Amino acid sequence: MDDVVRVPAIANFAANYGHDSVVDAVRVVLARLRQEITTESLNDIALDIALSGMADAVEQQLRQSLSYSLRSVVNATGVILHTNLGRAALSEGAIEHIRETAATYSNLEFDLATGARGKRDVHVSRLFQRLLHEEMRHEEIKSGEAPFSTIVVNNNAAAVLLALNTVADGGEVIVSRGELVEIGGSFRIPDVMAKSGAILREVGTTNRTRISDYERPITDRTRLLLRVHRSNFEITGFTEQASTVELVALARKRGIPLMVDLGSGALFDLQSVGIRGETGVLDSLRAGVDIVTYSGDKLLGGPQAGLISGNSDLIARMRTNSLFRALRVDKLIYAALEATLLAYIRRDHHAIPTLRMMRFTKEAIGERAAKLAAQIDSPKLKIEIMDGESVLGGGSAPSSVLPTRVLAMSCEGLNADELAAHLRGSDPPIIARVEEDRVLLDLRTVFPDQDIAIAAALTRIVA
Image 1 (spheres, helix red, strand yellow):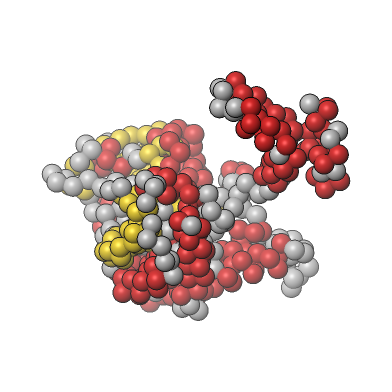
Image 2 (cartoon, rainbow, N blue to C red; image 1 turned 135 degrees about the vertical axis):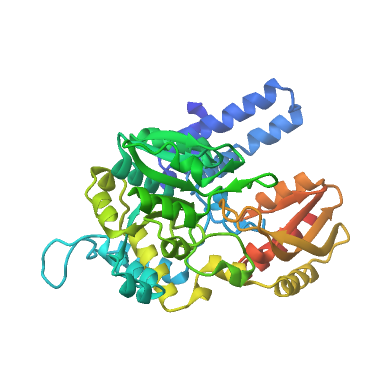
């Protein structure tokens, strides 16, 4: 290997990439070459070609190994909140606010008025106050109830963990068997509850849990009633579920807090985009729920974060829990979240990509698809524009779909999986769906300025 490293054409790479990186790249290329020789996939002529192109192979390996692994991709799946693709794309305002606060110092925990140490959550708590109270101001004045508060941790699982540990450590939490869900990455609600120190008391059956099932096991050890959003599935048929109104009444009657893990958590009316049956944050708070947990990077359309909104006294207890510091977020998350919430306050929903994608009409998507298809002129590629369905994804409204138009493609000489692989190998990678031996592209989740990249990639593939 040392002889290869000393070859002038390869040794020169050290000036740009460093000697150790060159050695690692040579090691990888030689291992690959040995594997091909061992498997007899190279004849003498191919071996000579491979050896003569050693410098090129090493340089390609260097570029690959020293380039970013986390890359921007084109999401043509039609899944708006695709967990594997990073969920919500941030608004331009959020990206700019991150840039201006990350590139220099900021007043993250500094009170500019007094010159004393401040609290980092003040930057978003003021905005949550406005968003959550605007709709409920008159009801609060009538009832004289304490205002709601909101705190931020690093994701919704952390929000659930913090809330359970604060309110129910050492006590029992009552939850329906039909809501003991498993979220992404094999994390399960019972496991999170066990880590919190709370004791799970499951009630009812998988498909039917009545309000009496919640009330019967309440004892002096009961600390919390919990409802969990069924994020990635739904139960239909012979079913029954206690309503939120019933749970609130029971919680008030027995003096026990009610917590709802919404998971997604919308701050706008989903019915305006045709999504029904998905409870929003305000819906839960209006109903009298004491604690609501939800995600920042799902229906809210912001950065990854776990948000806890609810009764100010309970939220204040969570803020003093030592877990809160362990789970807190940094200045970049606060910057992105602040910009996202300001867009809501300004009613500039179009600025938030997640909300904008939900509002695209089937007709507008179809027009874009037709223009894109017209740019590709090859008899090898067959493209049909047909009706399809987009989904929210991220565990949000699992039974709801948005009508769309998709490009359904087949390519001469390539099966659907091979065509999808070629698209993933493009720069930028293009992620599509495969259904019924065709590759489907849904432009609902493709940013308009990415259409040209798709056309260019398809043109190269069929060339």
